[in-house]
Length: 208
Image 1 (cartoon, helix red, strand yellow):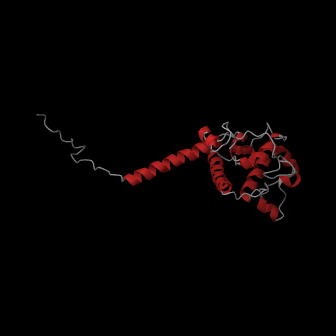
Image 2: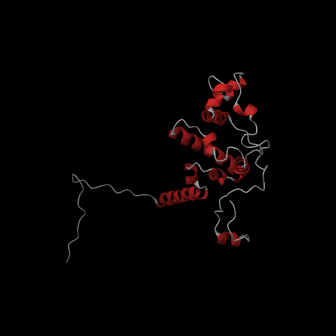
């Protein structure tokens, strides 16, 4: 008759404690992990690590801004990130993208966006700094001295580039519905074909 083997003590002879995770806690953590993975997938989260302007139209309301840039003089010379995120370091760039992205995702998900979106102070200062960064030599002639910020402008300490260049690069009329028929590379719908069919919708992939 085989003898029953006892667990060998680990290390200095003491047995490792057994950790018991309640089933409801394990189920909750599993659902949370699954939901997080689904959000990462449906939002194309990894696309935001690139500089491709197509990543900006993961949110449909950016379609008109994508279209106006695609028909501007800046197409081929500057991407969205070249203008709208800081270029003072990798950490500053992605920290700014993460903060702005979370704010945009929250507002857009709750449908709290206005028709005509206005850039905020932090974004305005970044765009102004990038105008100076790319057009440095021209700026030395037109506006020598320290770079102007939005707060400085409001205190009469100079002008921002787009005080004169109002149409660059998004045109005169800017709103989320100013170019409804523009050809924009929206991502395909994340809804599976069987679910679209069950809802009586076209089984072909539709834009998100």
